[in-house]
Image (tube, rainbow, N blue to C red; front, side, top):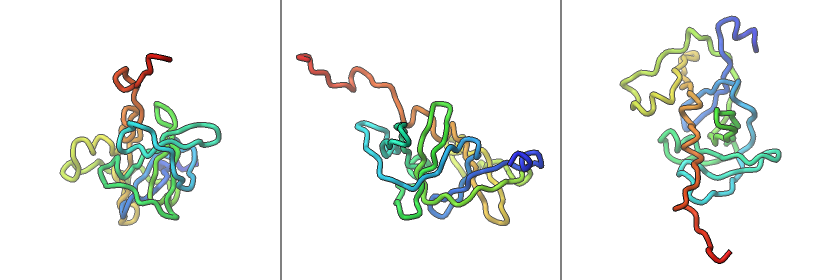
Length: 165
């Protein structure tokens, strides 16, 4: 893959949410697994489906459809969890389908059209790539899934404490 980067391309994992295709830089992806039900976490943000145990590590699972404001994921036999490494740790991204790994030429990546997205959404998008007439939205992982959206420190008010213990 490094030869592809030297030739002016970047490798991305391409996945689908509904009818749209998205991409995440492959250097941030540690694995892709079949969708599995997660264990809900009380008081978790709405886009957090829960947690799973992946090879001895407990990782949060984020519904990327919901995180991007596209409704809730309807899982199927094609659904996958893309395990990514963010600045704040490993996170699983629940997606409709993970299609392929491709090298996208840097010169085919354009800026996000300002008129097409809100300011909040524009932050999450690294660019838009043209793949033979199909547009792929390239996500900035750390802005798409910042730690605050799936993990927050417990506050005293959130905890119920039994004084008799």
